[in-house]
Image (cartoon, rainbow, N blue to C red; front, side, top):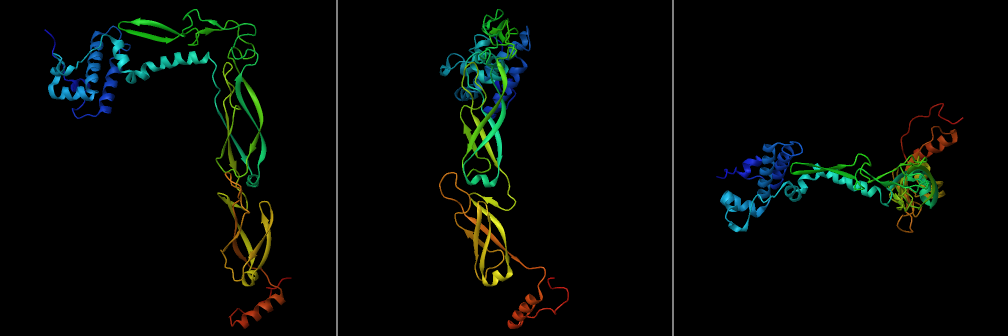
Length: 373
C-alpha cells in the first residue's frame, strides 16, 4: 500500500497564494537543509530532499500548479492531462533540472574547474584605470603627458608558463590533467579541485627562478598619452593594448586614462564656457570704458558700456574652452563688480563734490584725513 502524499504547499511551507519567488526561496532553503552532502547516509534527509524537489517541480510550473490546485495529487495519476510528478530517477535528475537553484552550491566547484582550464590557455589581460590631473589651461590645446604605473605581465624568461627555461609544465599525476578529483557518496557524486595542481591540471617540477613558478612578474610602465583639447572632469581615454599583460601569449588589456581638471583660482568652468569676476572703476560704470585683463590664453580687452550696473555680465565670444566634439570654442563671461578707491586726493574729492552739487545730491561734510597722501 502506497503512503499518502503530503500537500505540496505544506511541504514547502508556503501559502496557496504564494508567488513564484516565494516558492523558489522556500524550496532552496529546504534543499540546502536536506542536501545529501550535508546529511551523509541519512535516509530520512534524502527522502525529504526528494519530496521537496517533487513539490517544487509541480508548483514552479504554471500549468502543473493549476492542475494541482484543481485536482490535487490525482491530477498526476492515471495520465490525467498527460502530466506526471516526481519523475526523478536519481539525484542527478534533480540537480540537472534545478541547476539554477543549486548553482551557488555546486557552482563554486564548476567555476574552479573552469578557472583551471582558463588559467592554462591564452587570454587577454585585465583592463587598467589610471587617473591623471591637468590644469584648466591645458584644456585649451591637445597635449602629450607622460604617465607611469605598475602592472603585471607574463614572465619574459618562461613565456608565462612558470617553468624553468627549457622545461615545461607536466600533466598532474593525481587528477590526470582534469583539474579535479571525484568521489561518490550514496546517490551523489562530488567533484572538487585537485589538491596537487589546484585545478590547473598541470604541475611544475622546475619553477622559473624569475617568477617563482607564477608565470607573472610586476613591471613598471612609462607611456605618453595624447590628451585632446576640450577634455573635462571624468573624460576617459582608451589606450588600446596598454593594460595588464596577457596570459600565455594572450593580448594585453586596455588602459583607460581618466582626466581630472584642477580648479582655477580665477576662472570657473561650465561646459565649454568660463566665468570670472572683473573689478571696474565706478567712473567706468558711469561713462563706460575699455579694460585690458587676463584670460586663460592671454590678455583680452573688455568694453564696459556706459551706464553698466554691478553684477552685469559681459560676453567675450569664442574665448572660452574648445569643444571636445567640435572645432568651435565656448565663450568667456566677466561679471562686473564695482571698485571704489579707499581714499581720494583733494582734487578728486573736489570734483566729486562738484558733481554731487551739480546733480543736487546731498553728501557728507568734508573730513580731514580722507585724501590720498
